[in-house]
Image (cartoon, rainbow, N blue to C red):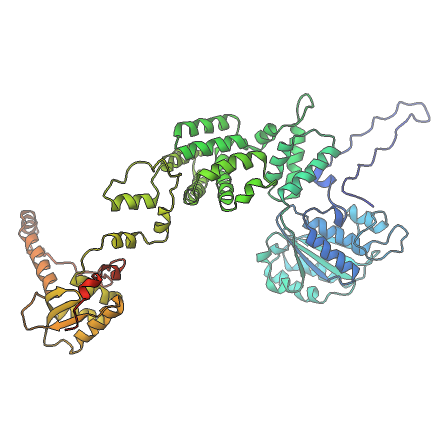
Length: 593
């Protein structure tokens, strides 16, 4: 049975001809890239797809093989490879030619050999990216009418199926739902959301997951050993991380690293691969993070310059810094991660130390600034300059006092400039949580509550959407005495008779206290509308009497001065916690009279 690590067939031996001529020089064998040379040929060769393999093996064992499969996942995780293994498994006849469908194709029968060589007439592969129309699908539908030429099943593999047009999908629906018994469809896509639901419902769907870094590293190590290439574990780690879960991408990078090689055939080091990938060394990223946390802009720029001279892209360096911020946040949130063997030694030791001294609010702020910074670098005409500006910005906000500290300084009457206290880690401590919860203003008010005014009562009526009460409080009430929980007032004749009761009920509901609203015959103060009108009139007259305004009116005869009406949606400011401004309990004692 063909396996993952299969040697290339040796070229035929060449000797002298019958007439004693010199043997012909052997032709160079075309090089096969690692991604093709080590393409999985059985289900056992697939890495990182245990759920898929287990389901398909059970389906073969129970003879419950679907008529259509939908394989989805990112590039290079094995969608097309799985489709070809399925085609061989369905058509394998075994070494003796008498076998049936099996999850372990033999690799030596005629069908297996032809499918491996991509020349079997009954296994049709179509790239939907270049064949998107209805006519292309109609050719497939027409081909389903005929039985296989030599295989047991006719297999149609449609790659990048999401690229088909809407009409092409519609044309395929009926055949996809009820194909002839000798037909199987295997559809593959990287954009599952673009596939119509009507198509998905007719297929058995398998989501091929990204392959973990540890699995990729182990896989690449085996291949490097098979290729007799000496490569450092750190270099393999770089390649596995850069592959981003794609086996094919990782093998392409491994091919490139081997081709880069060394002059003396020594080991391919992690530094060489980092240079090839344009990555910053792990130590550079940690050094840079420590400089940023310390607010040392000069050191941060020196580290960035060193990385740039080694060939690292500073935009990638910021992205690495962003990844480190995520790692530190995870280590802060899950302390057990520091002892995990899945992390490299540098990340376990230096990462744990950094995570111990930083706070979650600081790391959250760092993440947001780096995320925006990476976007700025991508859009900037000079990537290096943009990255350096981001680093300087990060260093200067590193010693910024946290919101909780700012609130404390304001409430205590101190200034707001200067770094955070030395005893607190960057990003502050518990004080920031109050501001993060949106309660800073309420806490300040509760710490030093001011006296309630009649304007607060009017604002409360507006905030509670009692438009009638709000209007009469402004237009019909002449305030005589305001001494909570007693309000004495004179009402205009047109005011409703139950105005006092409504106002008392509103205040009691808000403060959980009983209020006394007393009506008086004393003149009292002007209504709020009258007071505001008088103030507006005085302001207008003051403007008219201004020498500059008089000069303008003389220069432009017929010009008028008009007061601007307030916006209709303007509402009076309501205290953050109105109940916190209510009088203390002792003011309510003896208020039964």
